[in-house]
Length: 153
Image (cartoon, rainbow, N blue to C red; front, side, top):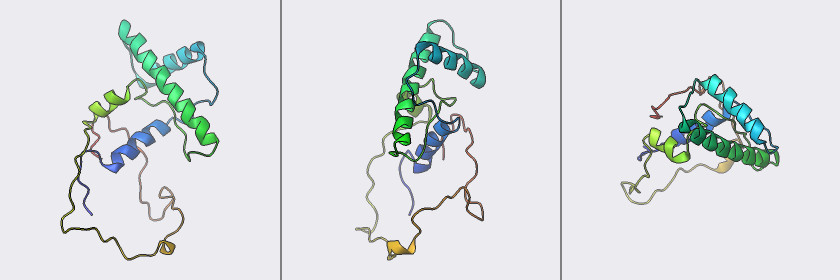
């Protein structure tokens, strides 16, 4: 089946993978001093420097994203998610800014040609319960790469 729309599933997966790259943040609530320390380390690690008031704005967004990361990771520790999040090079962006950077826009529904979708005639028992494509032989996926503003996959 051919995918039609502006945001391919792989782009969504790439966003999640980009967040996961640097690992999990602590599940405990962070203090202002810890956040400031993480902010300083993060800026050095990712080569970001902000002038004047922009630094305070970006720091506030960064702290908000840290809270989201910690909330998610606490749920992951409780078994609600199978993955953890961490602060990547995009941790200073709001969700709106991130989507705009990648040219995101909501897709309009597309009618499938030929009428009703019939699906494949395959029983669920024919498939394994899970597959780790990272360790599949022959290799199926490559390591996550930073595509910058591309977002084409």
